[in-house]
Image 1 (cartoon, rainbow, N blue to C red):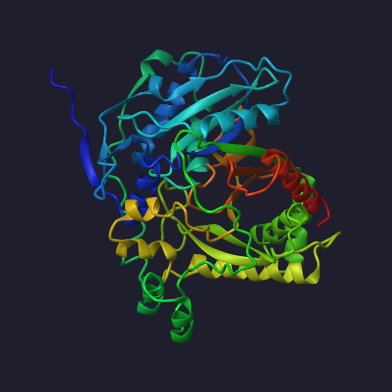
Image 2: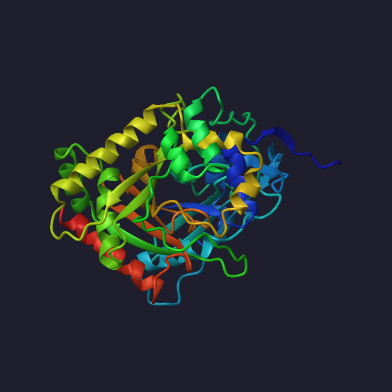
Length: 474
């Protein structure tokens, strides 16, 4: 019998090509959205097949979980659907920790071990890594996936379906029957970053194009911006972009902000006409300011991810790449105590800026990619050049993970992380809040990217501690 062939879906869009080329260059691998599950009932948590029926539900609903990328090394990459999936290739169960480590330490180690791991060739680029936790009925489920098949919000969407599938797995379920699953037959949705959805003006286009050939003072005179970022001589950007495939490594730190603290922070934000994402910017600027004594550093520029699903009329539970972003600037601050009026004003301004960017479809930075003659060369060419911002802020927001789950499966925490950027900011701050639960923060960075003397891990540990203290003071 002749093996079934893959079915061509469509060519990658410019922004999808960017994520494909970045991964093929080795600059970025797994986005991870993990969840701590508490399970009641007769589950054998050490057996991979326990999770096959739940994964089968995910695959039957989500075409993005059933595709592979072809010609990733070229400028004409494409997606094709594979006929079947073997879940044996997608599930890893780790053994109990031999060290006397708490759950957050175990989770941090699991994330750090997986975030730089390439995906297997020929298989859809996603996997589930399961780490047993201290309580016998609790596990950490890390859903690791390539940015080529989805943005950060793809993670919570997966977990809702996965939790539902786990809840429907009973003692009578023939687990082995689910190892091989047929692919979802739904057609792959069209790309997000089309000219029709994201139009671009000539003035927005000409600035970056002319920036490649004209001096900055001429661009200023003409009223064009060479860069969409808002950095200047006082912006902290750490080291220039560098990459060595042999030594590249992401480091991860995990911080938990307890529910009572988050409730208080949200109330304070509302009183100042801001949202939590906006508030994190001045808190992060404070934390970095305390660890960077160089007075020549006067500000921090953030690149903040924006979920555009609502703006383009896409359901909130649709997987895929629907992220855009915008830049914002926050002044250095060595203030103590609650946020100052100036810091609250900055949080409000950023909140308004993010809302405006999320509602307007014209002149988004990712739209410029359709005019890049060679996206792969453009990305590789960033090596040796200065970074254009200080921090990436990526907040998945408030997730109601248990909405579709039953009494046998309870989600206790949700955690989101991504690799340290090679060609992006030196630090990423990734956050997600489970409804009624904690705000979980991960900080990630490329080893060597911070440009500091001494231990980078100790530096980020202090930044994390100061960020947590900042929340406590709201």
